[in-house]
Length: 249
Image 1 (cartoon, one colour):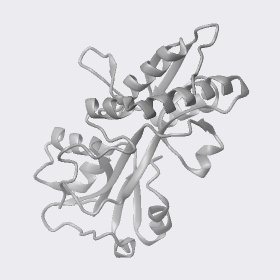
Image 2 (image 1 turned 120 degrees about the vertical axis):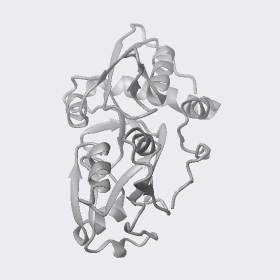
Image 3 (image 1 turned 45 degrees about the vertical axis):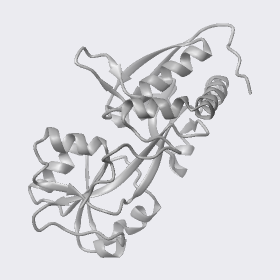
């Protein structure tokens, strides 16, 4: 299928929260990461330009829901979010979800959510960890934190028994916070969850959503998305995890 360009170019505003290797700023403050590469490629093919802005995750979601921005970067797909955003059909990034524990005397995890009963678990507010995690929420003591670094610090200080994070974003923060000797990822993974690009549900964005949807399909079919994932050291659907991503306790 060939996706044609519209007659008039549009500047698209893409918003999201900082996410290592996916959507972040370099030393000069320029946006970089897989999402930036993907959206610039999509916009160029559509005849558009794209501008990026970083916001706390709740605000970024609200802006797109209200039509104040064109594209939300990286939301997970859930029944609740499908009522608020118009997702592209296919994801552009695959996130591995894992538990972290203290290296010395920490909690264990063997893939059984029943074993979490009574434990103190930290998770990032607004993240979707999958149906099994949601079903088990009532069995453990859940603390929601605003950012990954908050959860890691709570874990290192013994305020929680487990932190539910993701890789490689959390691995980068573990090193930057000097916690590599204190906390470790546990096997097996909680699971994986895919990240999407999403437009507002308002009718005026419908044509753009259809166009970008077709263009992303072309990028996936040609292997370009896989190449961009490898360039940024991130896994995309259908590709193997980058080297080193399987290491855990």
